Length: 618
Image 1 (cartoon, rainbow, N blue to C red):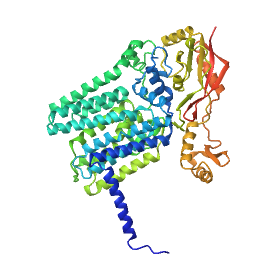
Image 2 (image 1 turned 135 degrees about the vertical axis):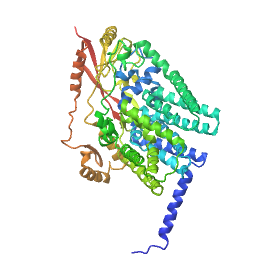
Image 3 (image 1 turned 45 degrees about the vertical axis):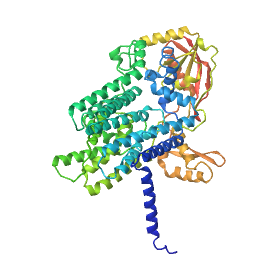
Image 4 (image 1 turned 30 degrees about the vertical axis):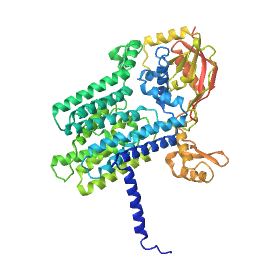
């Protein structure tokens, strides 16, 4: 064996310390220039991660994110009838942005822009940590690291670079929280004008978030109550929250009020078709549409819900999002409460009043989420702040000499678990043009009506079909009333050319295998010797339920293992038969002899559809 040069370990350690020091100098929030550089680095990383994930193709995008933006820009509120199912009438403000970005720009550029935008969330989260950690040692380093850990949480990662609105609106909610903390610091400094300007800015940001997505109302309530909890003059706090409330209402009304007014005038319900038991809009059934399948059941589940949905992620989501942050927060908070009850003293550092505001906002936001929605992706805002809250509890729970080390390890493990369990809502390989729809035969669009049959998301194709036609949803998730069916019948009767758009067979579990094979290509396992390693991996990782398929000489991919397909795949013929039965309930008949299968693509992913003529039952 060759001798190790004397002093080599010491030189290596010195080199590592120099690298860490260089990173700290560039990433720590000790100068405004470093804040800008760190934010730019995270945004650039976000854009690159979005490119690696691929073209966004989630269910909501295919159902309404593209269509709603297109429909608002082209004035289709009364021309079409629920082609994107009940989601056709959700506020389309953010979807206008998605449509213009994704339909007008080269797809990879649009994806990079969305990833960079989501990376920008780092800045307000770090700002919140900066103010909440005032007076703490190594705050310049802790604030950006805790913000980065917030970006490595499961709900945020699942929507990264995509059109689902939670990540984008989280930018405005966290910025509003930062402005509230800043207003309270100005109050402590006696800067009254700056204080009320900050309250007004917080309200404006909150109003934008609520206008873009109504579910952010829970965070508006939480922030209003949290704003009352910092120190200082009580009347000044109350006045500040009043400014916050007024500004948020004015901005939300200015941005989204026109839309809700138009929907109210057209359908008798500003939130149509939701809450129709209250508004009684004639085209929807008189029921309050709410998705209660995710809510906890019984007292025990309500009391232990963070443990329940961590052990069974599908209780709160359609996709499995692995995470440890919620059970750790739950257990740590209970331990801290127990220690406070037994009055065991531990020397802990004093935290700024801003941390109290963060904790109240976090706690009220969580309680409202659990009681009203219990849908995991609506937790994005709280998960962004969760590492900061977990760090605080560790500092309060443990002796000073151990708290920082244990807190760092805990937050690191939380981030690693979320990264290893990273799951998304659906992506495809990039193509320069994000969306391609093969044109159907429609000789007279102005005299045509197209029925989108069934509950599959199909409305994303409509921006690329003739705009003179009318498009209507049939047998979808829309809560139809008798008046809806009568209105649909009048539309069909007024147009002599009638067509149906029906899903076509796509193959078994295609989305899962597309995602797996993207990672296979990323790690170089799809060709040459990589195929041998892929064979080994498929044999060892039984959970994949996969086997290796040779596509071309020297090229391979993963596919489903024989005998593991549990859900029967519907053929195009079966889908047509189902559509025939659905249309029969409306007095319509499907001309199956006229049906043809046409191609449509999102990125390089194929989403074929069937195009058939429709007649009236005589």
